Image (cartoon, rainbow, N blue to C red; front, side, top):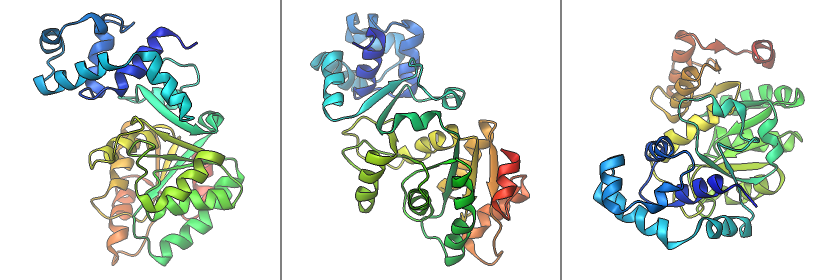
Length: 289
């Protein structure tokens, strides 16, 4: 059976009313998390500065189920929970400023130990964007690089599909729980990745996608990877957030240049101007990594 502290962490992580920072405060207060279960409601306000609303939600969930029951329900759904305390937790991800406390996994867990590169970009690629992917990705895949992306429409979807069609490996990071795949149009692709590749989220199974989840999710995409490749991105986009996070995490950032007349190239061209490596072919990436 799993270690008690890990079980408690999975249980607490599944409760409503707590986020990354609150769990960090819990762990600082008691690394075993055992005392959290003995505290009364007023303690959560005085010790952790939680709001009354969050305390009500959290306290209810905490005492509604036992850690063993939460773990058993995940196993029944064929979901493998991986905590930051586990040896299999990816080393690269552990090095970031705010690593996920718990990852929920479906598929080939061994892919977490493979060498990863993330590929992100616009949800509405041009024919140029698709052609660039067909030029660059097969070489990376043939060099045993696992393609990490976010299952979003456009560049993300194509990155996963190319990895699969080239008999390579891919990891998809969700911005929701497994029971609410977003976008729903990618449900079939998500099922295929969950059975043959690796599907990951830090959100418990019943968590629906929310707008703020996606920038938060992007730190996992970049955090798992040695480098991030941006293909077509507007000046203000999720892809640029991923690039910024990759830079903050001390990772390589690669960008494909494009026409200065196209909005979807403004972001990538700007990245190159600010020091990202300009990519003309796959060798440009391989020699850096």
